[in-house]
Image (cartoon, helix red, strand yellow):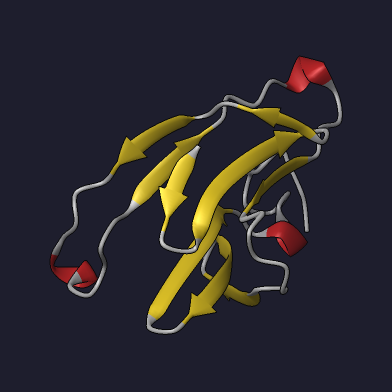
Length: 105
């Protein structure tokens, strides 16, 4: 679990709360207003067949704002002067063209 200013971030696989590996990234000149940057790692295994992987902030009931970019899908949450973004490397609408073996929403 990662504790943030907006509450804990939790990860679920098929609705089961799981542990994940947390790696702190070094902030660079592109992240001058950022307090922290983390990589949440879960080792996906194809042999487990279809998996629903969900990363969320249980303390926030509202839907976040969807953001996307080149091979990046993300949702951002806001409270006062805090913005928290949970994203993944993906291009879900064209995942096969980009070489991913997963899709999602």
